Length: 294
Image (tube, rainbow, N blue to C red; front, top):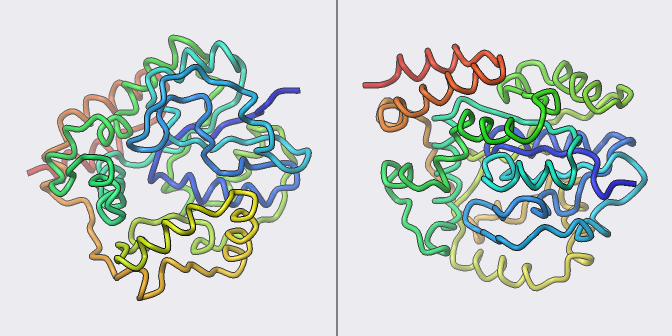
């Protein structure tokens, strides 16, 4: 029996939270707890790095039930060491890759980091998008061709199911049916409530000083105690971090001509590489980027 059976390998801000949480309703799937155990990749979130060799015994206790064990560590795809590690440890494993128009993805990722002050807590300053874009920790998650080129030196393309996150919004039932087929699972009916399952940057609120204290105290609670509490709150659509005392309303920021001009040239070149490697049609994204550049 394998320690893990399938992955959602990326990318951040491309519908991965929605997909993982909806799939967790399937009786044939056991989603990792936490959603991103970060065992194979050396990337542990946007800023965290751990170059020690992966130990698959770390999956012990991460899954409940007897279903297909699904790891949703979404920084796996852009992590440079992931392809060789995956080929060595789990050479035939199926991987779901959720993608989004890469400039919009980068802006959403940047906004999330700024709203939560994760950059300053990690010794970075992403207050300016143009400066943040020069940081590999933001940019590489939007360079799909660069990452895929590494992967295809180690694994087969048919191990990937590539999904456009926009389709999760426009045709969620079709997307879920494709995922079920890819994973060899029977079809079921899902609760598709987007507010319950998404992790939208537009819904994220900058944390207050009181919120920082609450977050710190909550971080001290053991995972075995905290997990059931979080699950119960999610089932009731309760987000304690949305309380006015804990967080404040954030300004909504969307990708504009300035963002497209900053990223456009490198992203368009990379998208063409990705299409040549995978056959995945990126022309709509390329046209959007080109038309929005100054």
